[in-house]
Image (cartoon, rainbow, N blue to C red):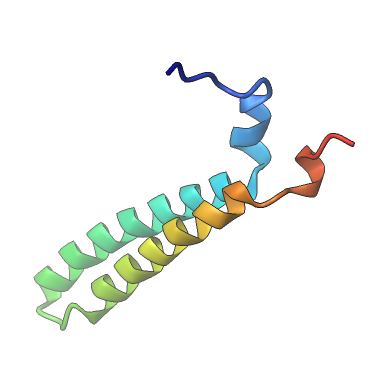
Length: 77
C-alpha cells in the first residue's frame, strides 16, 4: 500500500477546518504545558492545566469528523 498526498495538499493545510482544529489543539496543549509550569511555581491547584489539556484533546477529537465530513469549498461539482 502506498500513501499519496492529495493534489491540493497545500490548500487543505491552510483552509480545511480539520487542520485549523489541529493547529488550535496544538496551541492549547502547548499553553497547558506553560500553565502547568506556572502553576507549579505559584503552588496553585493544577485545575487550569488539566482544563487546558482536556480542551486540547477535545479539539483533536473534533478534528476527526471535520476532516471526514464534506467541506463545501473543497467539493468538486
